[in-house]
Length: 172
Image 1 (cartoon, rainbow, N blue to C red):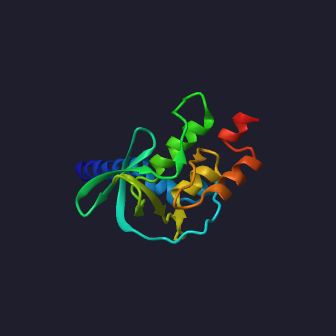
Image 2 (cartoon, helix red, strand yellow; image 1 turned 60 degrees about the horizontal axis):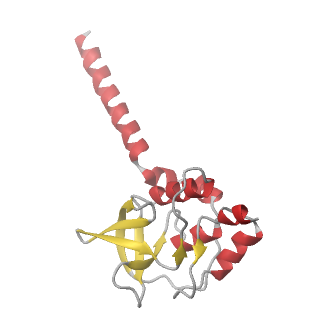
């Protein structure tokens, strides 16, 4: 009888640990293709380049914290105009949810040549394909392209506008 209780306790602890890891692991959420199915992506004329790092968090609802060789670095998403977070707006909630779901993913960080050190274009590969985070955000209407960036996001913005997605749904 005692052995059964020990086995049951060990089993329950293991089960609890697995559930806890699954709940806390955004990688589990983003690696599921359903997340990418809910978002939109317009492929851009851009080349994947930069250094690799691990996305470990977000700050200010739209900056990403990336660990590179043991050093934590904060990056502003270059080329974007993201409206201030508003909990009453669905696109605000979806943007925050998307960015949080990238935590735990490997990223390729391409610093902008004009940046003062913290602006970058960031690529992820949740399902083996490379996606520019900025294009996901703009294509899904979760933010707008900001002027003339090093990577042209205008096609992504035009796509979201024509489909009245996110911020563009509010404009119409």
